[in-house]
Length: 82
Figure 1 (cartoon, rainbow, N blue to C red):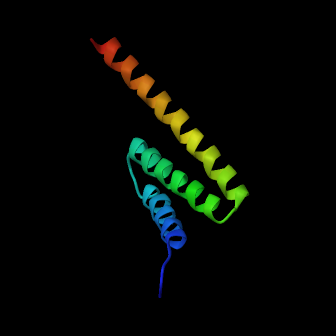
Figure 2 (spheres, rainbow, N blue to C red):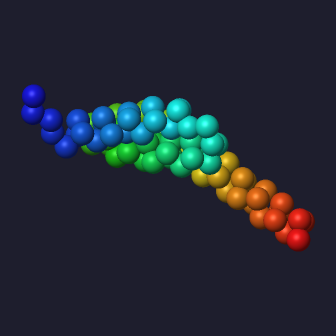
């Protein structure tokens, strides 16, 4: 079986998203899922699947939003504990 770059990108994206769902830590889950979403955006762009690009771009933005929110909460926690 000859796998080309597009197929490899699709498999890598699928693996990253599936792997993210095994994470116990929410930060790790969001980071791995974000990477998977970016890979899916690249893959979907290569095959011109624009609904897939749009959906994964939206999910990537949601992941960034919640990672930033968690980071702000951690900084607040650290400063209030000092």
